[in-house]
Amino acid sequence: MRRFEFVEGSSSKFWEPELKGNTFIVTFGRIGTAGQRREKAFADEAGARKEYEKKVAEKLREGYREVTGGGAPEAAPAPPSAPKKAELPRRVPAATPTPESLKAAAEALAALRARLGWRSWEVTSRARRAKRALRALGGVDPAAHAELAGTFTALMERVVAPRKDGRLPLRHALALLGELDVAAFTRAAEVWLAAPDAVPAATTVARQASALGQPELALRMGMLLAERPGQAGAPSEEGWSKRWTHLRPHVEEQLSSSGGSLATWAQSVDAAKDAHLASRLARLQA
Image (cartoon, helix red, strand yellow):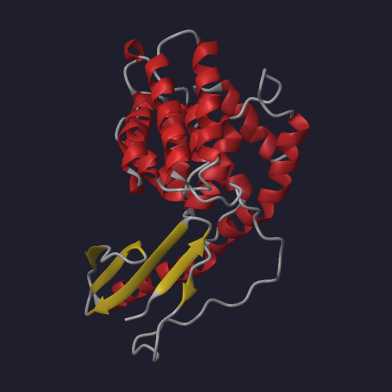
């Protein structure tokens, strides 16, 4: 069985693919744990092998390194080397979480949750405090910390909660997710997809994550699409454009690898009910 590992900052994960006839099996989780096991059956062995090779290539693009010892009987071919381009900068500065910083983050998240449904400026103020507190943790997965897990999950659910219950605006949710391990975004997207009619913009962000096929790029794209340059506390239009300039070649490469293009992808995003989203999509292609 092949084994791949990803170690960066506080993130430490492994991923092990396996083929058994027409079944594709993966075991994954944090290094040092037994991890989780998932199986997916295909109509034939060729279909399972195609999925195997596709997923291996995705993990390599995401920064996983193969640490298999002694070779593997069913090794998938390595993807062709691509022209060297600038790497994506880290979203979060490296840091080691401490009991004190975890407590501060937990309190900031709880304070934000308690203010949902209040005046928008109060929610925004609490969201910024929570964002700063999460940033001090160095990009952790909240699910791995009992102090954060429950409250953070509840906040992501409030993005698509009934309006009368007090929602967490999507732009604030994505700003929080931008300070964490990308696994948190993947789980949040699943929550938002489960309520497709609640907040169209959240559904759009979740669906484009699937369309891009690369959670890290999808998170960064979602953050760009949800931001509102020019508003108080938001990035400037110039700052927004610089971030998109750095991200664009990575997105275009990902889309072209599956036979798509930026223009086609942007046109596929449903922004009919969201004027802000429509304007951001237009800026992507400018």
